[in-house]
Every structure is written in C-alpha cells, then in structure tokens.
Image (cartoon, rainbow, N blue to C red):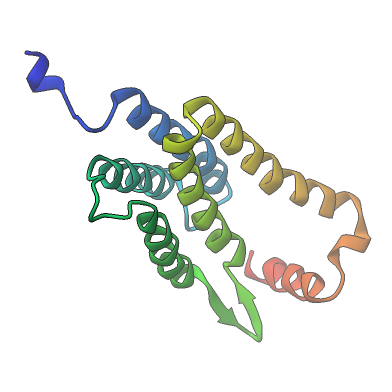
Length: 158
C-alpha cells in the first residue's frame, strides 16, 4: 500500500505546498480577472518544484542539477512573453508575466528553502500585487506617465 501512495523522489507535503502557493497567488489574479489564475499559478509552481526535485534526484558526476533552475527561468520566460500584448501603443500583461516569473521562483524555493518560506513569499507577492493597486488609488502621483495612459486605457475597456 505504501508503494502505491509513494511519489518518490517527490514529497506529498511539498506537492501540497506548491499547490497552496499557486492557489494563494492565483486567487488574487483570478478575482481580478487576470490571465494567470488559480489553475495556471498552481501548475507553474508545481511544475517548477517537480523539475527541481527530479533534477536533484539525478545527482551524479556527469550532471549539473543547478542548470535545471536556469532552464526553468528560460522556459517560464516564454510563458510570460505569451501573456504580454501591445494594444493602442501600450504594453499590457507585464505584471502577469512578472507573476509567472515569481511563481517559478516560488517553486524553486519550495525545494531549496522549504514549504513555509515559499508560503510566506506567496503571501508577500499578493501583498505587492494588491498593495500597489491600493496605493495607486490613494496617491494620484503614482498614476503618471505610462501608468496614466494604461489607467485611461483600462477604464475604456470596462
């Protein structure tokens, strides 16, 4: 029975924390109607953890498992590029692309720094995503330049 439930070299607690971290960040994005929601966020964090854990289980004289982290960063760069668009002379989706990037970093941190650290970082990411929007509503000086163009474009889309 134990063999049936085993997912070695992975750990159920880390898989669960990857899904939780994706849920924490993805819920904020999904509630705002952004392209990187719960499902995508959970899969990015989980996939990143699985790649890092799998590469570290192959550790021998012929492998350099640290290269996998670099490959993950490159791979999620393509995902991030896919959510960025130029509309009416304004680039949109940069925050979603940055969110994808940090989600991959959270997946790495689950393996490297532990589940609790990754959960704390996920909460910090949500605080940044939500907090900056709240500050922009309160301080008009934060909506100058390209941000004023984006906000007027965003209001036209509603």
